[in-house]
Length: 204
Image 1 (cartoon, rainbow, N blue to C red):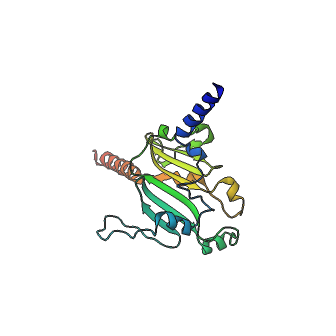
Image 2 (tube, helix red, strand yellow; image 1 turned 135 degrees about the vertical axis):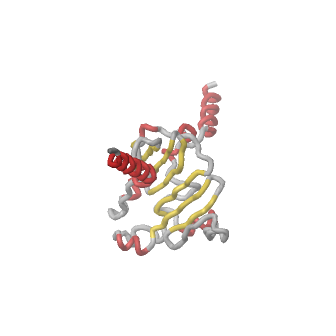
Image 3 (spheres, rainbow, N blue to C red; image 1 turned 90 degrees about the vertical axis):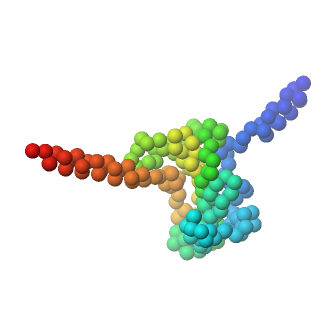
């Protein structure tokens, strides 16, 4: 009986959605371990922007952009120039994946990720604040989750704290992946303030 319960528990565990906080990779690609060659083996060469102008973006040695069923996948690479600048040349594979950012086509709710929120630092990443954005960052596992009104906009996978120890020049600020400047609100507020001042001055 105990053996049967153990088997059932094991099967149940396998069927549970994987926790984002435990996932240090995306589709088998791991920052600082996987390279551009690994990415293109999995996803092929990055597609060029469409000719109809519906999307405009640039590709190069330092970046690739893919469009999958999940959404847009932006992959940044550590080029020789970058590694030399941060004094990590020879310590990290050339064209190693620096980070992977997945921007969802259909935004899941945060609860669907089944994360252990106690492992994450949470903060408001927007400027101005208090407009519905919230970020969750686990700097140990190298994961930044950006949400708006409880829905996940994107997830960024970057090098774990342990992997970053290979070179002191590899400094990642997980909080930066979710920072957002909503400038149009500030402009509206600024214009509103100007209009109010003009009305005051126009009164006899």
